[in-house]
Image 1 (cartoon, rainbow, N blue to C red):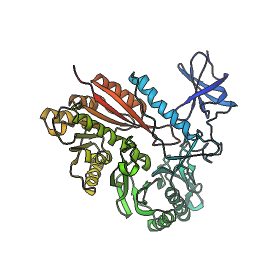
Image 2 (image 1 turned 120 degrees about the vertical axis):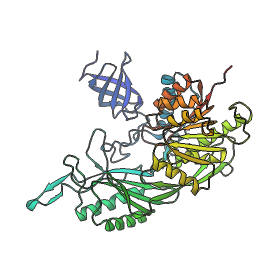
Image 3 (image 1 turned 135 degrees about the vertical axis):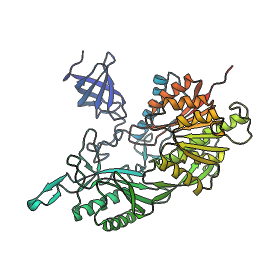
Image 4 (image 1 turned 180 degrees about the vertical axis):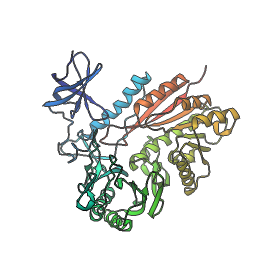
Amino acid sequence: MMEKGQIMELTIEDISTEGQGIGRTEDGMVVFVEEALPGDRVSVELIKVKKNYAIGRAVELLHVSEFRRDEEWCPYQDQCGGCPYGRLEYSKQLELKESQVRNRLLRIAGIEPKVQPIIGMSAVSVDERPEEVVIDEQYRNKAVMKISTGGLMTKKGGIQVPVHEPRIGFLPAKSHKVTDCQNCRLQVGTAMAAAQATRQFMEEDHICSYDDRWDKGLMKQMTVRTAFGTGEVMVIYDINGKGIPNAAKLVEYLDDAVYEAGGSLESVVIRNSKKTETIAGKNTITDVVVIDDLSDDGASADETLVRELSFEISANSFYQVNHDQMEKLYGIVRRYCASVCSMRESGNAGESGRESGPNVLDLYCGTGTIGLCIADLANHVHGIEIVKDAVLDANRNATINGIVNATFTCGKAEELIPQWTAEGKEEAQADIAILDPPRAGCKPELLHAVAGASIPSVIYVSCDPATLARDVKLLHEEGYELVEATPVDMFPNSGHVETVALIQKRKSN
């Protein structure tokens, strides 16, 4: 029986999404080991022992994994916590994520899935290690950074000043101490430049960060959104107050810094608990995406270029954080939609009898990006989203792109679909349901509603293989089967992976 403080040797076989190495004892007990990587042989001290697993720390590295990167890969790697896979070579990251999708479907859904090779970032080979790849790691178009000045300190005369200089960056795991990140490898230059301009402004004007212990101070966090397709930049400040003193000076600093970094500052927004207000520029920025259907018939990139769309992004709207991988992700959705269309034409899916394209229900549609990307393949796209502002954005994006066969409704899909089905409305007579839920996955009521409406095809866009597998199992019980799944690496150096799954209703005998 294992005990706290016990020392043992382990070979690390896998890694958790939080970046802990996973090894097994001789009797099969799982041990999570901090800072250990697959392929490492380590001496481990157990620091916590539970009934079904243990947690340990590596006290000695006995054998170094061949997949381990240079220890100086990132100067913040021990302070930030934002890149739990950062010490792993990229090819190994992809292998683990693809395996993660396959294993979750096998273990949770209980099926032997057909999983396509993972779609990674564009890459080039390295001379020293030809099988390894290097990626352009500045892939995030959205940076959310905490702001800290250490609270408030009262000097003689009752004057309150910041405890230390402004620090802007990220929180390590299980910590509230902000890592002042001057040059994050995942963020684009415009985000880092805007953060530096904010530091300078706060220091010169003695602006304090918010301290939740005393409910005092102003600046909580800043978000920088960069539209990769246009170079437009939006900076959003979450504050504890009505406004930022001398905001015109801050906007000027931001404008100069973003321009020097190659972007164009188009919007500065402040948010508090009551409202969102644009204090400079426009309410939105515009991004452009080009969707390739990722056809595998040997066609050139020019021949498979099928869709170019513009999207307005507001301060509170959801938008995928990896622009280049988003284009590939939506390309897979298009490919699956086209596959369903082909099956309908051959009489193998759907009984609608229509000669036009399929009717599509876009559920958890957000600002409508996925539905609008496949609208040219469809007879009609009807999106449902519970967030009112997102629905307004979706309808506006349809207008911007001249798309007339897509409409978006505010409401709960699990309530609207049964209602439309009972009333015999055309909206519920869909051929395809696209599901793009949050990390928690779909509500069971929604999956029951989709099955109850006898929608023959489901395209599920998941950001968590575990909840995808859980929902695939529920749909299987409702008479559906998983055709195939394609993982997409939206978040290099993290433990997360996106997956697009094609699910079909089984034919009754």
